[in-house]
Image (cartoon, rainbow, N blue to C red; front, side):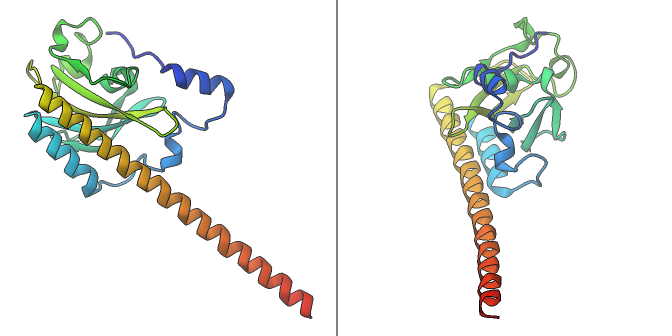
Length: 199
């Protein structure tokens, strides 16, 4: 088994120390949140379109891959060293496809291949933030080798775009909520100053 490489942009950002956390994931405040229908609907659709047992929205931090949505899989995270998704994020332009992991030196002895859930087939679309950093993937998984049609790959990409749209809407809403709180605090301070001025 080969461990995934650290993404080139992550290495650069770590050297400059301009982004707190891994790939700016903290700015989305999404890790370890409860399941949400918007994400679960997308993984269910991805599994159906690609005729796959499992579909995941996987987010990668420094030690693990955590699943915001896990259709067909009971666990909510696995170690980053085992994560197919941690390999997939290193090519943000393409769908990362493993037709048969048992024949791939990177994965043939991976515990996720040799034990449950027996990841034999994998296809993952990288989820890329607005600043170009990879957050994770939308992926489909099966316990047998397979190929996807071009139409299925196109649909998987489109669903990956929708995942990012939802994540970006979440981030924008958090930013607006913080701005509203800051504005209320400033208004309270101004009111106090006005009262003191007229006393």
